[in-house]
Image (cartoon, rainbow, N blue to C red; front, side, top):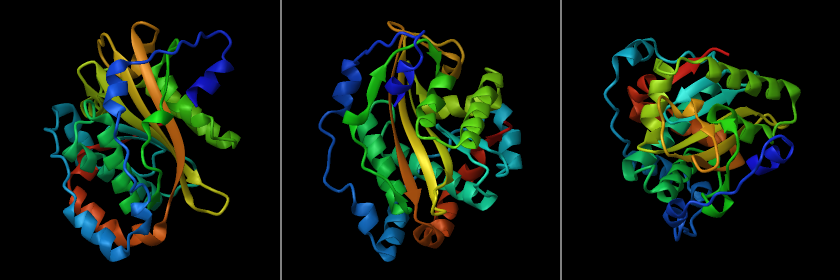
Length: 290
């Protein structure tokens, strides 16, 4: 967790800030069907996917047209995936990269169709985790109690991956994440990658997004360390990624967990996911050099 990380940064001051607005948004949103995705038969999964509706694609800005025309380069290690950043280890091949990106994008768009991700946060994340489960991800139902609110003098681009690094023990994995942070810091503040992320994640003075690191575990299974982040701020001049989290000016809530992908399931729903995504798989995904 972020709070644990920051204890090791003695030069930093940790201040806990609780937002009444967010606390109320998360209240009373628990159901007892957290494992329903795991219990579904293949037929039920396919039927559930058919019923899912995705949010409409936003109008593509001029600067994003070339990215959409080219389509994602799945040989990259860092992606903007709508309102999510995804980093992939060297153990993840291109087909798996495409599957991870498509499945997480699909879950985001399904959740955004049903709920406003910045005013109905708990409902949005519950829908997100439900749809991930239907696709074969072994994921816990979203629990607002697990979110930790902290404030410190770090940029958001550093915070989003510091959260994930706590679960990494392989130096090569840590190096990939460090390279991803460096790449984000080098992005143009008004460039196409930032515009894509801003459009999906930010509304008014709040942002809701995900970050993830994907690798393979000791059994060869696709494993994702997934971070949920909600950031509130008084003012923003360009993009939240370059914003420093400071007490009184900014707050951030975060949680992370490790999830696995059951390929026996996803292999059988892949085509349907891709078909339903349509142009979204090109217009809302972009690979970044690291």
